[in-house]
Image 1 (tube, rainbow, N blue to C red):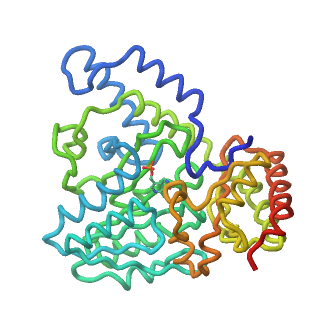
Image 2 (cartoon, rainbow, N blue to C red):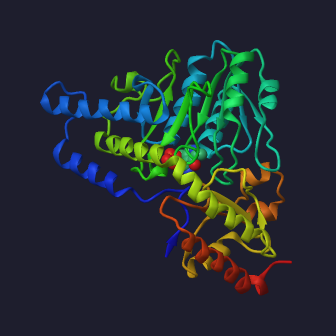
Length: 381
Ligand code: PMP
């Protein structure tokens, strides 16, 4: 069985597993304790913080460790909204964000904030002009993903950040960076992002571990009451072993990013060319997107049926994103891109990782042809 669902999660890197195991066996101290066990844990934490910061070109004390990007996105959005409520209660985002952003702003809407959901074009993209035009005197936050997790669409985050800071320097800019890091060059400070979220498990690190970059000078209201860990922004004993594992995974991902993009883009382009000529399939991704994701629809077939057929043929892919694939609803992202309901409900995602080769791509191509040949008699017309 070949796994083509790296956008959902990745197999932990063997070096990461080794590091985590060693620390769990030998260094179990609480990083807040002042005795030797604690100091050793604290030292590991400091080193990991510096490593994670270096991988995205920011300062170590701008990193807050969290349980993953869901928590980072919640903290960034609700934490900023609550902290700066006296400035205004208007937030700008898009109709195609990940559930952890989308549901966070919906919750704020229920609590009295106003949210502008910018429409995306047929490729799922917003422009800097759209963002700038939506800014009002009471806008406090713009939240936008770097790369869309369902389609691989890349937003012009640098252009948006720079124009936003020129027009409205007080408006905070949050970037959900989960699907971009390790795949494309990233530079949250250069993009003028104030907040930037990551999850370790998308880059062969451990699950349940992530970070939020909080630019120097930006304040947030903590969402958890408790101890003063993580500059008081994230109470709770740090998971030192997993955090060190994340730092290692991030270093490997940052170092191999250019090579990854060059190699995997060739495989992805080839897959796009294949899908484009199979009758009955419709592409939802373009070659301009991030190098690791291809999304397509099979409007004549239930997505689950297509997925299980591909699985029988030895290839694991995904319906929509893992976070929403158990929902019967059509993809919110594909609907926002203007796809019809049948197309939005039949979305399938292929996502590649560093281990994939041309032979894997050939196997998947063959499986796609075989899937359609098998399912053609059952297609809805
Ligand atoms: N944002 C994006 C774009 C994602 O792809 C994901 C993971 N699917 C998340 C946020 C949430 O990450 P996690 O599930 O690790 O909390």
